[in-house]
Amino acid sequence: MKTIQILGTGCTKCKQLAENAEKAAQELGLEYQIEKVTDINQIMGFGVMMTPALAVDGTVKLVGKASSPAEIKPLLG
Image (tube, rainbow, N blue to C red; front, side):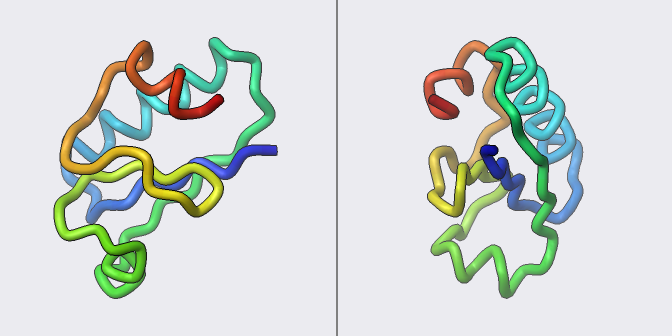
């Protein structure tokens, strides 16, 4: 099972990234769980200084934008 983490404070882009990541995972038929990390200290612990960010199984894959499901799919593989 993949753990997809959305790093951000809950802004509009953060919510869009969460929706797009979930759609990408569903289209790939993955078993996954979405985890929203909103605590700024935890976000900084990932080395992220700009949100939103996407981490997969604890590894940051995307920073600073709400990418489309098509752009996210390769990051989930």
